[in-house]
Image (cartoon, rainbow, N blue to C red):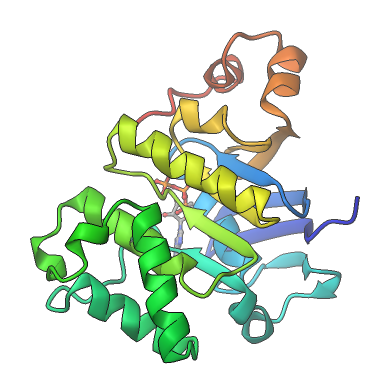
Length: 242
Ligand SMILES: Nc1ncnc2c1ncn2[C@@H]1O[C@H](COP(=O)(O)OP(=O)(O)OP(=O)(O)O)[C@@H](O)[C@H]1O
């Protein structure tokens, strides 16, 4: 199967710190690919390089068969950063309307999309509320809604469910699987084990290196462990939850 994103021998250093080392990965169209690893292992840096927000020190990122050009891919991707980029004084609706205008959505389409994404993250009743009245989890969900607004076919989600309780997290994951059924590709970072198990494939990052890239079941079989977390522990790592 052709890869939608290909990382070839990617390395990244910040001054003398080697954050990523010779990472090679294929992301396949229509899959949910999880990047899993302890804090500081390089997940965010890797995602940023996939969308051109960070440039590799070495190696090449290919997006849909061509060398990545950030400006060209932006209309077709959604990116949810680790910290929420929201205007606190504006309402949820005003925040989304602003993002929609950046993507050039027409008025009718804008209205439809705002309702659709707010329903998905279970925030529709809070549309008119200013963001400074939102809880941390609600802000996370609004950021997710914002990343989905222009119907992107590839989604990059950096710890999208931090601060969200398990019940709602499950609902949001049902939403991710719905997006997958619609043919979208999702790249997601997480620390949470039950999320890792819901991905089609996982890339395990430890000390800036991909130690495994496969289905959760295949990884567990390969390492002879009962849970993905045990792979890190077996490799001399630390517990993932933080
Ligand atoms: N712009 C930067 N300048 C200098 N160092 C950086 C920069 N961005 C990241 N780093 C360093 O690179 C390492 C990896 O950071 P990164 O945010 O990619 O890890 P992570 O796996 O996403 O961590 P977390 O799970 O805590 O978010 C860290 O040591 C971090 O301090």
